[in-house]
Image (cartoon, rainbow, N blue to C red):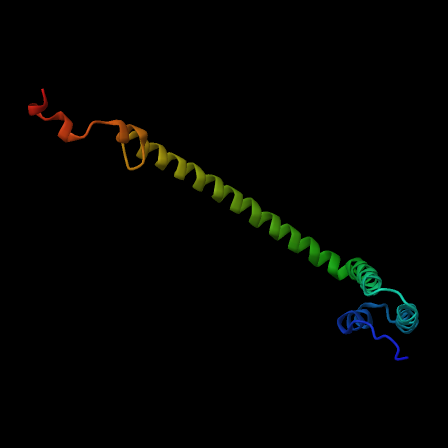
Length: 125
Protein backbone atom coordinates (compact mmCIF):
# COMPACT_ATOMS: atom_id res chain seq x y z
CA UNK A 1 0.00 0.00 0.00
CA UNK A 2 1.32 3.40 -1.02
CA UNK A 3 1.58 5.89 1.89
CA UNK A 4 -0.70 8.93 1.71
CA UNK A 5 0.99 12.17 0.78
CA UNK A 6 -0.20 15.36 2.47
CA UNK A 7 -1.39 18.39 0.48
CA UNK A 8 1.68 19.98 -1.14
CA UNK A 9 0.86 23.57 -0.24
CA UNK A 10 0.03 22.66 3.34
CA UNK A 11 3.29 20.72 3.71
CA UNK A 12 5.29 23.59 2.20
CA UNK A 13 3.67 26.10 4.58
CA UNK A 14 4.29 23.84 7.55
CA UNK A 15 7.97 23.56 6.64
CA UNK A 16 8.27 27.35 6.39
CA UNK A 17 6.21 28.31 9.44
CA UNK A 18 7.25 25.78 12.07
CA UNK A 19 9.81 26.95 14.62
CA UNK A 20 13.28 25.84 13.55
CA UNK A 21 14.05 23.94 16.75
CA UNK A 22 10.81 21.91 16.46
CA UNK A 23 10.43 21.69 12.70
CA UNK A 24 11.65 18.13 12.11
CA UNK A 25 9.72 16.57 14.98
CA UNK A 26 6.54 18.50 14.12
CA UNK A 27 6.70 17.56 10.45
CA UNK A 28 7.34 13.91 11.33
CA UNK A 29 4.51 13.73 13.88
CA UNK A 30 1.97 15.45 11.64
CA UNK A 31 2.92 13.28 8.66
CA UNK A 32 2.70 10.12 10.76
CA UNK A 33 -0.77 11.05 12.06
CA UNK A 34 -1.92 11.90 8.53
CA UNK A 35 -0.70 8.58 7.15
CA UNK A 36 -2.51 6.75 9.95
CA UNK A 37 -5.85 8.09 8.73
CA UNK A 38 -6.25 11.72 9.78
CA UNK A 39 -8.12 13.88 7.27
CA UNK A 40 -6.86 16.63 4.99
CA UNK A 41 -8.88 19.10 7.07
CA UNK A 42 -7.00 17.96 10.17
CA UNK A 43 -3.68 18.46 8.35
CA UNK A 44 -4.70 21.97 7.32
CA UNK A 45 -5.72 22.62 10.92
CA UNK A 46 -2.20 21.74 12.03
CA UNK A 47 -0.82 24.15 9.43
CA UNK A 48 -3.16 26.86 10.74
CA UNK A 49 -2.02 26.23 14.29
CA UNK A 50 1.64 26.42 13.30
CA UNK A 51 1.03 29.63 11.36
CA UNK A 52 -0.72 31.19 14.37
CA UNK A 53 2.29 30.50 16.54
CA UNK A 54 4.61 31.82 13.83
CA UNK A 55 2.65 35.08 13.69
CA UNK A 56 2.78 35.42 17.48
CA UNK A 57 6.54 34.91 17.48
CA UNK A 58 6.87 37.48 14.72
CA UNK A 59 4.68 40.02 16.53
CA UNK A 60 6.67 39.69 19.75
CA UNK A 61 9.90 40.94 18.25
CA UNK A 62 10.77 44.46 19.41
CA UNK A 63 11.49 45.81 15.94
CA UNK A 64 8.16 44.71 14.55
CA UNK A 65 6.34 46.13 17.54
CA UNK A 66 7.84 49.59 17.00
CA UNK A 67 7.20 49.44 13.29
CA UNK A 68 3.63 48.28 13.88
CA UNK A 69 3.02 51.22 16.22
CA UNK A 70 4.23 53.66 13.58
CA UNK A 71 2.15 52.02 10.85
CA UNK A 72 -0.95 52.00 13.05
CA UNK A 73 -0.45 55.66 13.97
CA UNK A 74 -0.04 56.73 10.34
CA UNK A 75 -3.04 54.65 9.32
CA UNK A 76 -5.14 56.21 12.08
CA UNK A 77 -4.13 59.71 10.98
CA UNK A 78 -5.00 58.93 7.37
CA UNK A 79 -8.39 57.58 8.42
CA UNK A 80 -9.12 60.74 10.44
CA UNK A 81 -8.23 62.91 7.44
CA UNK A 82 -10.37 60.78 5.12
CA UNK A 83 -13.27 60.96 7.56
CA UNK A 84 -13.04 64.74 7.69
CA UNK A 85 -12.84 64.89 3.89
CA UNK A 86 -15.79 62.51 3.53
CA UNK A 87 -17.84 64.54 6.01
CA UNK A 88 -17.07 67.79 4.22
CA UNK A 89 -17.85 66.16 0.86
CA UNK A 90 -21.17 64.85 2.18
CA UNK A 91 -22.11 68.29 3.51
CA UNK A 92 -21.25 69.99 0.21
CA UNK A 93 -23.10 67.33 -1.79
CA UNK A 94 -26.14 67.57 0.47
CA UNK A 95 -26.09 71.34 0.23
CA UNK A 96 -25.85 71.24 -3.56
CA UNK A 97 -28.69 68.73 -3.77
CA UNK A 98 -30.83 70.91 -1.49
CA UNK A 99 -30.14 74.01 -3.57
CA UNK A 100 -30.94 72.12 -6.77
CA UNK A 101 -34.21 70.91 -5.29
CA UNK A 102 -35.12 74.39 -3.99
CA UNK A 103 -34.34 75.97 -7.35
CA UNK A 104 -36.55 73.46 -9.16
CA UNK A 105 -33.77 71.52 -10.81
CA UNK A 106 -34.11 68.17 -12.51
CA UNK A 107 -35.74 65.50 -10.43
CA UNK A 108 -37.17 67.82 -7.81
CA UNK A 109 -40.83 67.37 -6.90
CA UNK A 110 -41.46 71.11 -7.06
CA UNK A 111 -40.32 71.27 -10.69
CA UNK A 112 -42.30 68.16 -11.57
CA UNK A 113 -45.51 69.53 -10.01
CA UNK A 114 -45.26 73.01 -11.52
CA UNK A 115 -47.51 73.66 -14.52
CA UNK A 116 -45.81 73.73 -17.88
CA UNK A 117 -45.93 76.92 -19.99
CA UNK A 118 -48.45 75.30 -22.37
CA UNK A 119 -51.01 75.08 -19.56
CA UNK A 120 -50.62 78.77 -18.75
CA UNK A 121 -51.49 80.16 -22.16
CA UNK A 122 -54.24 82.77 -22.52
CA UNK A 123 -56.26 80.52 -24.85
CA UNK A 124 -56.96 77.96 -22.18
CA UNK A 125 -59.29 80.28 -20.13
